[in-house]
Length: 186
Image (cartoon, rainbow, N blue to C red; front, side, top):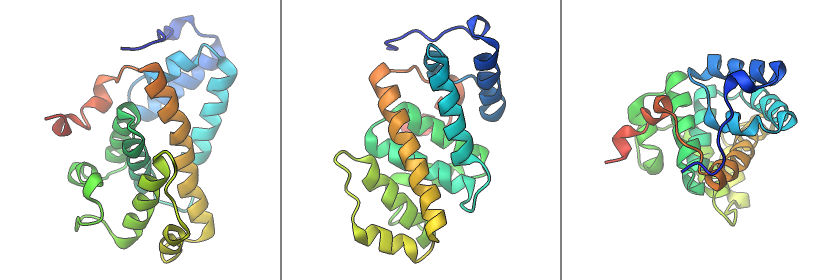
């Protein structure tokens, strides 16, 4: 159950409304967490800037970034963010079969060694306390430059905030991302 009510889009100031409309255009739906965050417009603006920087032009494939977000969110226990990241991965062309196999990434033939290294870091960094070790970065360096590793860690860190935000507030999941995880609900 949502602990704080989302605001209505029409009740927002024009700048915040525009940011959320842009999010809707990118995601295909209005995210409930943004409508709650809109109670503090400068926070919405800061989050929009972070999301744009993390998912903007870079060297790491955006489909992999979404899988990293999903893995970090799964490890943190945030169903809302995991579903959002799964939806985003699907929108980036990642197969539903691969999305569904994130928990078994180490043994699944669907993942490359580079993807396994990135998802491994996301799973370990998403846990509390953080379980990353130097060996995890050695594994990443076999496939990614330090600039690319920075992008991967930025995804994990962004989802760290969003995982805390959404699990604390019990944010209600929207129907569109729910469709990305329905097969996993049993």
